[in-house]
Length: 161
Image 1 (tube, helix red, strand yellow):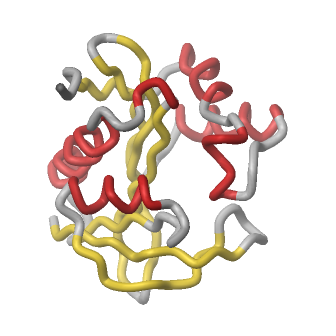
Image 2 (cartoon, one colour):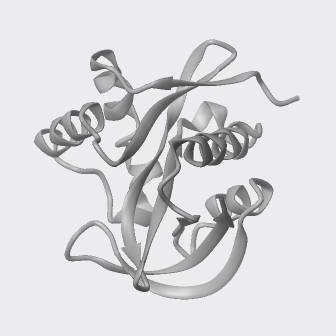
Image 3 (cartoon, rainbow, N blue to C red):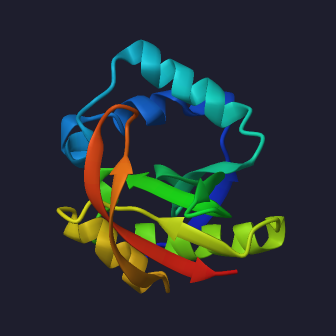
């Protein structure tokens, strides 16, 4: 049974959650954990994200992960990029796909873009399944730079807003 999901705006108190999401098992497809100063910098960016929104994902009232959308230019179009991370104890329970659906709905309300994309690694079946369950359409494979300086082969998933 899928827990009740809420998205809460990212807040000052969410740094501890971001540190937990920086674990090796959660970042191996992204090049591994970041040093703590980079996690702190990321937290500060999330707090003042001007183009898009970041959220704390709560499952039955308990912090379960993060999700958000932000602007990017992709193939000469201004789009929203969607990204998430869910703590291991909440994985496999529908938390990420429910949060992704809610985030797409928030991006629709936010306006400003015609589509939202997600770019999970081709080697990350769970994140690709989230895209499929959240209503994204697979466009194909692409090379994607993340983090900066590290190229990965990803799937380009899209949902029209």
